[in-house]
Amino acid sequence: MRQSNLYIVLYAAALTVVCGGLLALASEGLKDRQQANIALEQKKNILGTVMVVDKNTNVEEEYAKKVKSFVIDSKGNVIEGVNAADVVVLAEYKKPADQRMLPVYEIRSESNPDKIDFVVLPVFGFGLWDNIWGFVALQEDMNTIQGVSFQHKAETPGLGARIDSKDIQDRYKGKSIYDGATLVAVTMMKGEGVDYSDDLHKVDGMSGATLTAKGVNTMLSGYLSLYENYLKKVKAGSASAKAEEAVEEPVAEETETESSDETK
Amino acid sequence: MSTEVAEVKEVKKSEPLFSKKNRKLVSNPLDIDNPITVQVLGICSALAVTTQMKPAFTMAVSLVVVLIASSMVISALRNTIPSRIRIVVQLAVIATFVILVDQVLKAFVYDISKQLSVFVGLIITNCIVMGRLEAFSMGNKIGPSFMDALGNGLGYGIILMIVAFFRELLGSGALFGFKIFDAVGLTYPGNGLMLLPAGACIVVGVIIWVQRSLNGYREG
Image (tube, rainbow over all chains, first blue to last red; front, top):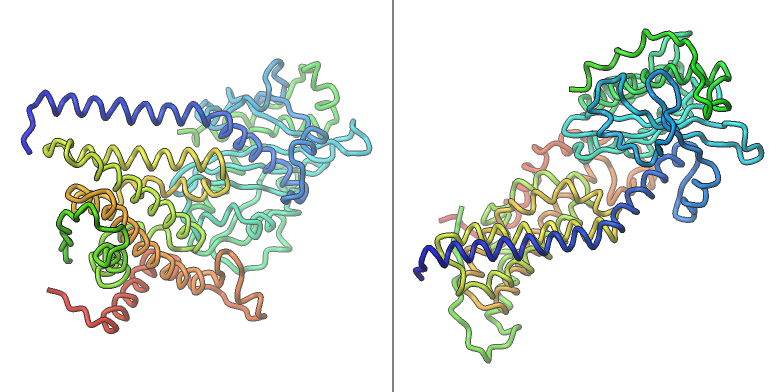
C-alpha cells in the first residue's frame, strides 16, 4: 500500500481530531462526577483521622455536622473570604512557605458546637516517586495525635504504598508533636518491628520503604511547623473563637522560614 | 525470544467466530505462545504491578479491555491506515482507549482508579498491545483480531495473577489484602525480596521452567 503524502497528512489530522474530540468529550462529560469523587474522598480522609469511616457512614452528613473549615496564613491569622475546599494544597506547596494559604478543619463536639474536639491539618510532601499528602488530627491539647491519614500518588505497591494502610497510620495514634515547647513532629524510623511505644516522637518504620518514610517525616515536620503559630494561638485560647475577627496578635516569627527549602 | 506470528490467512466470511482456528487464537497464548513466558513481552509491567493481587487483577482486566478495543479498531481501519505512519496510528488509538478507560474508572469506581492510575501509563507502552496490533490486527479481520486480543490479554492476565499470588503470599503473607497467615494463627514476617522486582523475576523464571518442562517447549 503506497499512499500520497497528502493522504498521510490528512489521515493523521483526522485521527488527531477524532481521538482528541473523544477525549475532550469524555473529560468534559465526566468532570463533575470525578470532582465529586475527589471531594468526597477528601472529606472521608478528614473524618477518618478522628473516627471510623466505613461503608455505612454518611460522609456528607457527618462532615456537614462536625467539620468547620477555614483558611489561615503562616502567621496563624484567618484569611477572610477563602473557602478551604477551594484551596489546592498542591498549588500552595509550590509557593514559598510564608505565602501559603493553609486550610484548617475543626471537628466540633457533637454536644457542644462551640467546643473544638480536634483540629485536622492537611500535610503535603514528596515521597519516593511522587507526591504524598494527608491529614493529621490533633487533640484538644494541640499536641497529641488523634489519628492520621496518608495518601500517595505513586509509591511502590507493597512497600511505600503502605502509608495509606490503617496498619501504618495507627502507629501515629497517641504520639506527640511537641517536645516541651519545641515542635519535633513524629519521626518514622528505619527498619520495622521495633517497639517505640514508650517514645512519643518515634514510630516504627516500613521495611523496604525508608525513602518513603523520609518523605513522610519531612512532610510532617515541614507542614506542622507552618501551623505552629496557629497552634500557639489555639492553645492560648484566642484563635478559633475569635477567628472570624482575624485578631492581630504579635506572634513570634522564628518558625516561618523553616521549611522553605523543601519547596523546590 | 520468539517473535513468530500466527499469520492467519484471511478467513472466509462464513467462518464462525468460534471455529477451531479461531479458538486456537485464544488458547495458544494461554500456554505455548504466552506473551510473557514465551514471547517475553510485557515483562516490565509484570514486574511492576504484581506485588499485590488487587492491582494486578485491575491491571489485567484493564489490559484485556484496552487490547480488545484497540485491536478491533485497528483491524477495522487496517486497509485505510497509511503504512508509513501505522505505528503512530496504533499508538494514538491505544492511548485514547487507555485514557478513556481511566476517565471512566475515575468517574464511576474511584477506589479502583486510585489503584490503577499509576499503571495506566504502563498499558500505553505495553509491548503486548503494540505487538498484537502490529503483528495481527493489521492483517486480519475484526473477528479473529478480537479472539487474538482476548487470548493474549488472558495469557498476560493469568501469568500476572500467578506471579502476584506468590509475591503477595510470600512477601506480605496476604491474598487480596487478606492476611492469610494471621487468620490461621501463624506469624509470618514477610519476605522483602518478594516485594522487590527481583522477586518477580524469580517467580516468572520458575513459571517458565515449570511451563516448559510440562509442555516440552524448546527455544529455537
